Amino acid sequence: MEVRLLEAADAEKYWELRLEALKQNPEAFLTSYEDAIKRENPIGQTARNFSQPGNYTFGAFENGELIGVVTLLQEQAEKIKHRANIYAMYVTLSKRGTGVGEALMTEAIKKAKSVEAIEKINLSVIATNEKAKKLYTKLGFKEYGYEEKAMKINGVYYADEHMVLHL
Image 1: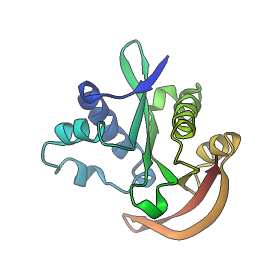
Image 2: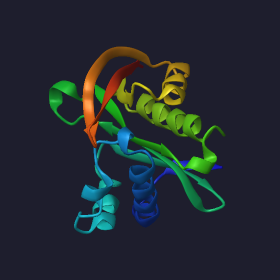
Image 3: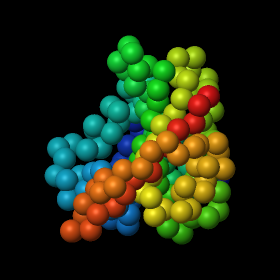
């Protein structure tokens, strides 16, 4: 397995995996599959996102196939530049439990530590996602908040746990 920063040339593979993520785990993402497929030129926009300052999207590859992704996004406003957020963490179903998620998160944390301004990383996780919470805790994240009814999908509410890693 190879984990690396994604580039514009990876945008199509990323978008395919993103759509899979939105279908497989709709409760884990704010964007719905239905909204995602309505986007105009999503691959071009994804490619542009990969080159934005403070936007670091890592991909895990196995035999040239993209099997997992995570985005570390540094805040840009002057007063909160010391914060970064983890978004869009996803590992394809057949590769879960094989260390892909840990490898991706480890690279994201390593990148955050290499950016002098970043002092902490925040993330939100669905409160019932025990495997993800266990991974984040193992990597040093601590819960700092709980939001009831954070999301509503087809009449079902989901709670979020907010976690932080101080670097």
